[in-house]
Image 1 (tube, one colour):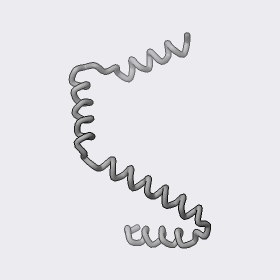
Image 2: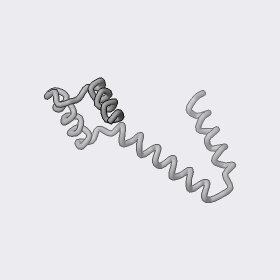
Image 3: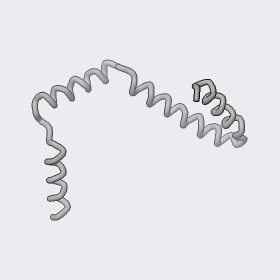
Image 4: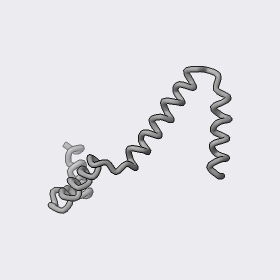
Length: 79
């Protein structure tokens, strides 16, 4: 389905809402959704710094493998 058709359907659903609280809840939900999409896609200096720090950690070998974590978790559970 094309974007314009989807938007039209969404508008139709919104137009059916009568309770102001429902409209406000939907607005908050959509605002949060858009905010998360924007923050995920934004390549801010902070995000860039975090990614570089993660890459440095990976390169230094200071990580625990998934298998090692799973083994440790089994040991903790059986104690």
